[in-house]
Length: 224
Image (cartoon, rainbow, N blue to C red; front, side, top):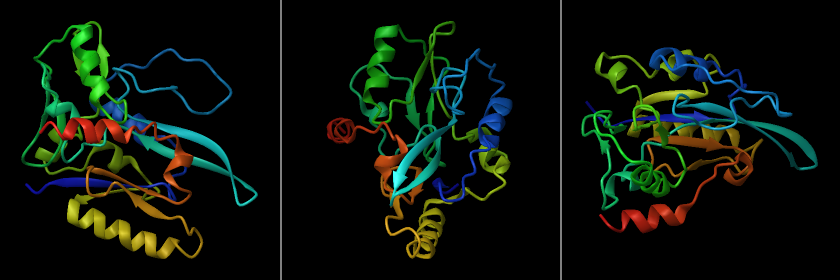
């Protein structure tokens, strides 16, 4: 199987959260009790039982209000910092499709988990206090083995999520950027060379609340 990737085209995302529901259903993850905090964004963060969520941002762009949606999950890095940390880690990158997965048979103390989470440039991994394992998006590697797309991609009706090989995804992303540039001069792909989940932003990546720390990627990958 070739190394796979997903294009997350925010210009087509409607914030429906179908991907969020599909992820919950496929992984049989329970819901969390939440409350209204003045935004439609819910839950407010990733959790051990929430592998993906849609973020909502209200920003001003060109004197106009823009409501920005972004799917948030593990980026399945080409060289994952969480894998190359020197201490105990359950994180492994699959050779067949590039999915970065957490070994559910390996338990960690909270302190060991904190090191895994700290290594992630996107602050993605979460700790299941009951099983003492690391939880996050699996890239639906089990569905891929069965010849299916990830659950979230299958559920996306707007075409915001495009699944294919890395080569196919990057080519599709560049094609979409070329079409969007006239209306959105800032349209661009984000980190297409280093992650498996490649974002197409139209207002600049800083507008979407990426919670991204590039120094972690540089510092950790250097260890490899």
